[in-house]
Image 1 (cartoon, rainbow, N blue to C red):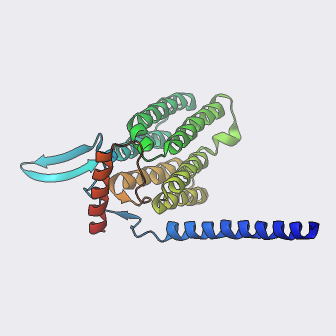
Image 2 (image 1 turned 135 degrees about the vertical axis):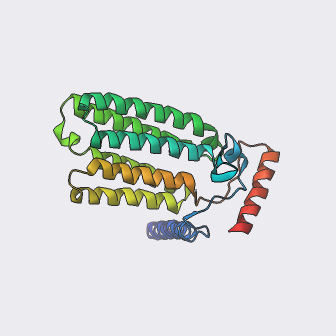
Image 3 (image 1 turned 90 degrees about the vertical axis):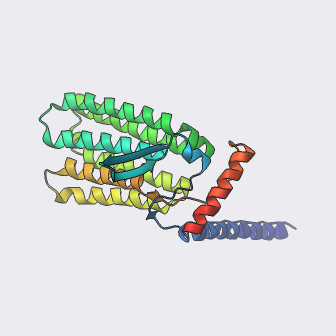
Length: 258
């Protein structure tokens, strides 16, 4: 009887392992075989949560359109962080400010960016059930700012000489986490680009701050200007039935234009 019980337990354990492996394999297949391209031109058939706070920009001179585009609140976050990133790293590369002054300046900009990010995205992440992604980015950015300040004011030389790899690494973690949460190959690829940027730093000599700013800023600009891939629509519990129906119709229109 004891032998039979041990044999049955062994079978159940193998079945559980097989089931887990099968589930992981199915997840990988659905994750890697997405029909949407990594990046493409933006589509105008936006979901309800994407239309909240939508920003339209149109620049004209004498009736000729020089630039026209629209930005969701997520795109606006990318633009804000892109501007902050460019300001911080260009200042560090070219302007002769003391490290203490720059630390205060960087911390203030990071705090503004984090608060703005939370304010702009709180509705979208609640609808998409991605609140943890927002918390992740807030922790990474604030934690990075604190670590940077401590390295400057307490004279942590080992950290201070590695500020560029530090911020590229924090950004990579954020993008990889976002990619997993959203099942987005674009964000995972962006995270890998930031890791590649860390490997590139030893070869750029004294231009590490400019290189770091270019990698981070250009990535943010591309994400703001183009449409990235994302998992299929979910059952949006936070929306009304009418809003859910609207999203279903918008999804149908997007599938036609793929």
